Length: 229
Ligand SMILES: [Zn+2]
Image (tube, rainbow, N blue to C red; front, side, top):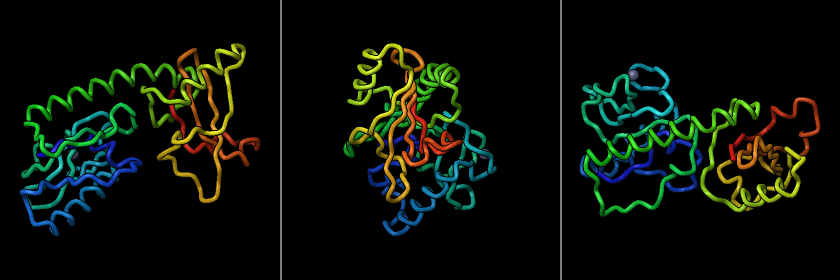
């Protein structure tokens, strides 16, 4: 079984080709494609396809076939009802840069134990990050941060330097850096500016705004997406 990205992350904006979710040893290519399409559709729903309950943030999932041969993505609630398991995964409501899929090595097939251990490690990492960011969200006055960035990026350096040079300021507006808004869906023909709020040194919230509406009442609701750090 090839290594797979966490399932929840796989359904979010991702410039890479969609990963194959059905194991090649199981079915002919055409059937695999059909099942893959169904699996991706089910993953986008964010619900357990057996009991229809929403998948819980930072919880395990299993994809495969139920006892009747139906393609399913099960949450922890119904994982025991998956009769043929194609893959194990982790569902997350949020996107974390340190969990994004890296280049896979098709020659390496991790054991089930290794996959289970990798999922457990990621669950811990998400729990740690959530703990860290809950405070930033509360103090930053936002509740809908959908993405977290813990790795290094040019815009983080630039924001840090700007706030260091402007110690009395807690907000900044600037043009986005190349690649900064990858994965953000901008309405056709629109440009975005980035609004940065420093909650404390090293802890910042960013949101991309449409510059034509930011100065209008209620413009805060027009942010394309809030991102932490
Ligand atoms: Zn369920």
